[in-house]
Length: 349
Ligand code: DCP
Ligand code: MG
Ligand code: MN
Image 1 (cartoon, helix red, strand yellow):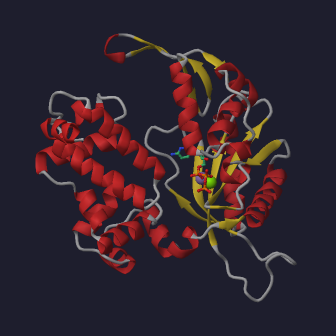
Image 2: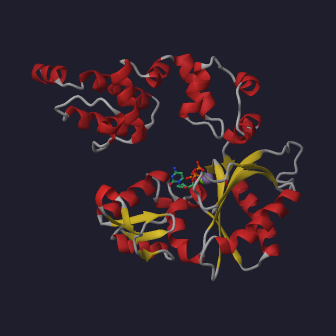
Image 3: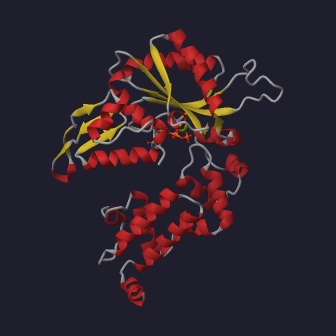
């Protein structure tokens, strides 16, 4: 025991490890198992290093150290502190951070920046901060958007979309994926997969989607568009908000009020339906483990399908795009990966 303590003190990364350990303890306290594990693995890696790890780049090259933790390692070494930990250990500040993080379109960096600027409430941010259009919606409908959607309301919302879709193109098929497909009792949002027989690229569905959005907007079902694609994305996604209209016998009691709900659409050509179903069913951790497994087998899994890994030359420059192994069929992708089929409700990690 004393020996181990000694060894730790001599470790050139002792201070970094101490601070990261406090982060791991914090995430453990708030039951964030994923981050707790992430920090623990990074700590184990650091304990094995004989040299001091000083920069983000050095840290990122180590096993089990992702971009976020690598940045924190550099912050600890250069400033001898970690702002994220200081918020975590300061309960009021942490509560503010959690408050801001629950705004749609707000990540860690933005939330921490607002706190540093002295903002403490949603009103502060609404009045004083410069907001993106998504964040404005996120704040105006904060309470609605953080409320979970009961399963039967997800079904009712899906039915509204289906009806409108069938009028535009009866051959288009819609499936609700995400936590709903995994059997959840309630969901954060509704994830709708849009596909059609004979389509080979998302472009084949674009016109349908434009018409569907137009129709649902004029029906007052879709009430907001949110930033729908990251830069460089292919326009296969549509993110926004919807409200369930008053439906006779379902929600037409006196208590009806239009609750804003998050809705995502994913346009998927038939040729990629298997990859898309796996991706959009999740959960995110299950997806990560499937992707990791694929890469261990010299393949690559993404939301379009399973590929034989891209050939890479010096500096890991891509020489060729990987060859598609399977895209259409969800079960075949499991088979090609050599994993036992798991029903959607068995994909919680
Ligand atoms: N997904 C992913 N990685 C992410 C985000 C999403 O693999 N970082 C995939 C898996 C998710 C699916 O997309 O299951 C849908 O994303 P959601 O954020 O809608 O998550 P869920 O539908 O799983 O849960 P929730 O009830 O919170 O919406
Ligand atoms: Mg979802
Ligand atoms: Mn979603």
